[in-house]
Amino acid sequence: MAELLEAYRRFAHERSGAPERWLLDQSIGLSSLYDVVAGLVAQRSSGPVLDLGTGYGPIAIRLAAMGLRVVGVDRDDRVLQCTEEIASRFLGPSARARFVTADATCLPLPDHTGFGLVTASLLLEHVADPAEVAAEAFRVLGAGGTAAFFDVDDGLGAEHPETPALFRLGEALSAWQSGYGGDRKVGRKIPGLLADAGFGDVEVYVLPQARFSVTSPESDERRLTAEHLGRAREGIVGTGLLSEERFDELVAEYLRAPARRLCHIEGRVLVFGRKAGVRSP
Ligand SMILES: C[S@@+](CC[C@H](N)C(=O)[O-])C[C@H]1O[C@@H](n2cnc3c(N)ncnc32)[C@H](O)[C@@H]1O
Image (cartoon, rainbow, N blue to C red; front, side, top):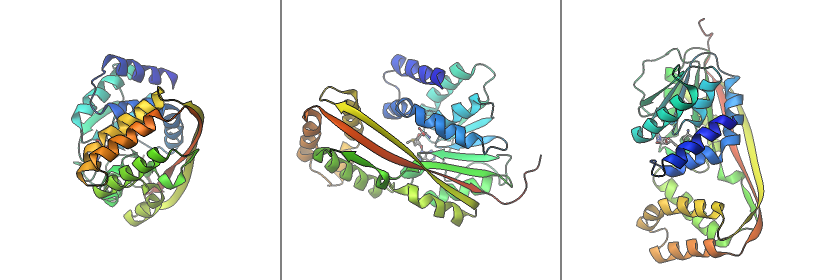
């Protein structure tokens, strides 16, 4: 969806101080992947969609643009205000997307609502107990509804040649994320989480992505990665995973490493599960 990518870019240009800027940049950077995920997920929809941890709405807005009614939920209302603005600019006044501030582990919704599809993109890696999100998805879905969860699994990645400083920082980031309850390897666990929550017909797909590029000390790629790591600095240093000096040294080493060709491969996991029953018309 080239026009949506353009809308995100315009918004990012106008709002340099947008909250959780990295998330806005991610909505732009992963645009082609979100096109694929939204296309696959839309095929399973049988009724309105609830998008959990919607962030800047890359899935919710795409699904709405495809004609589905969508409610996006996130606990960060500052981000949601921006998402609403992007959605209304892109979808126009008859917007089919609504955004609500709520916790995905404790949704303010009754059981068996009219939702036919519950999606969660890159949410589970950030929550302490992803089973709670799966249970909530199952609870609010109508009979015959589908859950579609899309998330990371660092075990599916490879980079050549490896950058030792970045590798070390990545390890610290992953350990810090685990420490606060997140999980960079949650992808492989989602099928079991859905089955435990009561879903049947569980299907698992890996969506690979790869790029071959030249990274240099001035490249956007390095700048964005350093910014991303910088946001975790306080947590990584505060939990003693790296000292302040070591963290800064590693980032500087990564940033000034000579220009080189890099092949980067990663895979993310998309899992569907179905709630038994027949959807009422
Ligand atoms: C990495 S972002 C993903 C956003 C979007 N789905 C995407 O694919 O770009 C994770 C989002 O989940 C939200 N989030 C984290 N924990 C949450 C919770 N318990 N309930 C609702 N939202 C949550 C965060 O505020 C953030 O917007």
